[in-house]
Image (cartoon, rainbow, N blue to C red; front, side, top):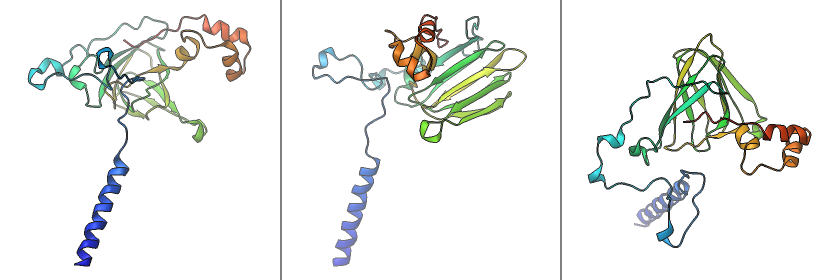
Length: 227
């Protein structure tokens, strides 16, 4: 009988330990969510408020038009068309989204990061030079590959990555991301185009250039290619 009690207690401890191992706060689904005690003035939750399931319909899970080529006549020569929870309400809580990326010749999807998602990219047309940079702890190693039609490449969550059209014509890619709202931080826009601007002395020291170079970059128009 003592053996049974011992086994029961051991299983209970293991079960409790397992719960502790898997217990954690839910991953954020936006940049921040400031706590409020007064729910009357609450605006956002971690994600979106849910519709009564009985009122849901097929249109809540539908998006049309991703086959249409987008206009790439902009300074970057690329346009990203996102299909996330803002476009398909039914994606809420499902942890996935999609994007179409159109490239003109020599078009660039500039170095950026998705703070909440891993990305897997499929080339539909053309040839892309793609890559990502690892974190400081891994000595900022650069992983690159030239992708052709039908090739797939993965960009790990949170790492800076890019895609450049190196083919003879236009290129198109499709990306799947592991979040209903992956977020995007374009590095140049965030560093040199922030509002209000970062103190030039901070950037001059960080990039080891003089203040005039920083001030010049801060005066540029930093285009956002995300629709």
